[in-house]
Length: 320
Figure 1 (cartoon, rainbow, N blue to C red):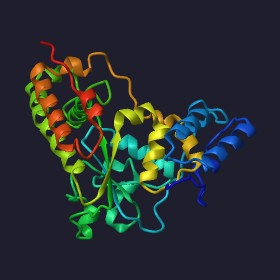
Figure 2: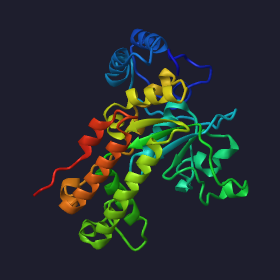
Figure 3: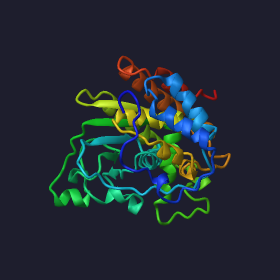
């Protein structure tokens, strides 16, 4: 998406199937024209079009969009969608598939949640690849069949999220995967688990892993890396997805952008109990360690990326 957004010949999902729209024809025509002529490098104009045509739903709709996803017909250079676990990778994949209509891949099985995860990225059928590690494939079955041990990425997207929230999300996931743990609150570890050595040990090791992974991706010199700030994505899905598509050199149809307003954008925003807060669950010793990791990342990438304010906002004050 260099320069202006252009309507491509492939058909957006909402133009075909399961998208029930009520709208003002003149407003839709105006929004389509504004979208087609939009310069993605003009953030002020971009925000205005997003506000009028998408967020305020002038000329928009009430919808139930289901996107018919497809594999690539022609192979594209692979792009890593990297993140520390718990940073919103799954949600970002869903948004990307909604915006582009193209399946995304993974270095993991993902238990059937994404069709693109079934095959090795090296087959050339997908180009955005989820990873919580580096370039090595690991034990992905289809890649082992092809004797592929490493993925050569042309670009990378690194999703950065407040590590306190990322660690909480990942701990909940880890505990829920243990068969002997049963919790009526889906996707949450039992409250009592946060008072155990399991939680304290998890924080100690994960804080270092978060630091190491973040520095690994942000210090890479061999490929271009785009930083997607999770908190900004939550705040403005449309704006951040348009900028992300621009980095991928991909065009988002206006109909697909409209579909981002449907319930699919809210799928992974869950209501959490009040006790599940970083201020309550991280003691001062944990905060000192995690704050130190944040400062190390800030110092390491300061000259290359302008994310100091974002990293500073992640630091938690001590209670004493």
